[in-house]
Length: 139
Image (cartoon, rainbow, N blue to C red):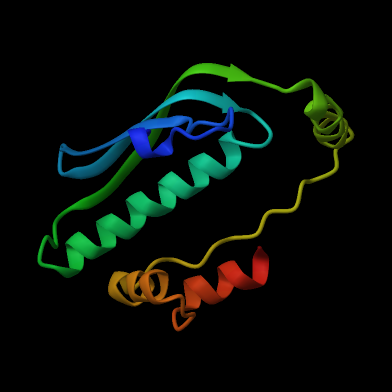
């Protein structure tokens, strides 16, 4: 990640530097290395996405014959974590809702049951799997 072809005339560069997958105590785990993460516009989406990729990879490996492999953790290591001034009002809004006793709505993503169907959907731009249909309905 962050290869020479990512360098363009814009100031934006990919924040994610590397993804590492490994088996630890029979659990498939991942560590994401990032140069920078915004706590409002980056972290929740990045952590969700990288956890999704880990679960997808785990399901695919199990379905390919690694039946005993367990799903492990996904961790993020970030050099610089920030909250942009333009998003400070969102931080306050989230904190206000949390401290007022209001529950923040949570929508549960469907479990990954057939990795190949999801991978085919991603590669083909289709929505045959329950997960991709859910993503489209909730995006």
